[in-house]
Image 1: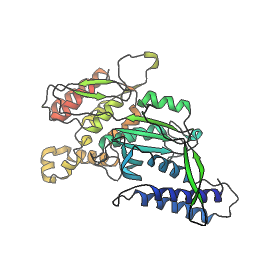
Image 2: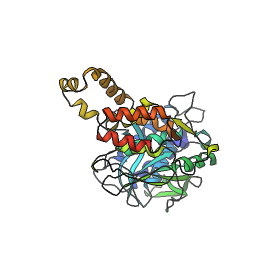
Image 3: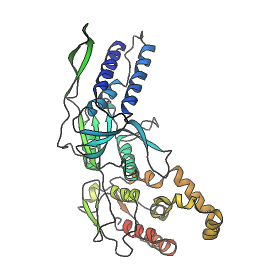
Length: 378
């Protein structure tokens, strides 16, 4: 894109943002205007460059295009990161829009990239170039761990330049993504590009979104309030009843644990030829169900060291090491892209060892998680 064209689009977008309705408490307009002004500053610095430039204006146009949809309300964040886990707030993931869509809380993820450069797997050459599969698994984890005020019921993906059919099919197969939102986005935006002497604007047909691909991924939910059993939605859309008969019903399995379980492919309608398996060892099984991995860090850190040493005795240093490891790299988040849409297996000796360890050392929550997790393995 040439510098002059990019600057024209930036100025037109600033005008469109000024026409969007918002409350006096909202800051997302300010965020968008700051990002556009940053683009203009960059363009002014390279004003005489003969080369075509790579800018973020197309991405910002896509964000504003979504915000103009009549069913978008209660916009709380735009173009800002959100913590992946309340336990490790310094780790974050970028969410483009947090709002309500047709009355339901959603997260929008926006991409203006050329479909040819949207990869499914992480790039081996560049650490920063994460594949779509890994990013979505992190988003699902963050959604399950997020506080109630920003927790979405679905994640909507907006690819303004479309998506290759192979990537589209993978999104549908692995995440249960659907293109049937029940609502459509307009194919064009109108830009106001020139001001006349009397102050009016000339309206011209602006950017086309005819190639845009919009998908929705529902977030699986879990509630422990139903004593007859819980309904768990896995990523392929299957519903499963979860029964916890051996413990009190106020036991919470944990949002990230449920998200991890739902990432595993169901063993129903198992086809050997299409099987992708992941083999769990004892260490991993213990880490998955451990209280440390399921929200227990704050409680441990709030406990006096003398009490912890008395409780854990010779295992105190090991336990603290596990806490530090979980804070740096949450195990559920690390495992999510590894096990996503694979079927879990465990050998008999590992299963017996794991059950024995949990029986001797586990609390009621850990025993419940262990029992539930083993039901999803073969």
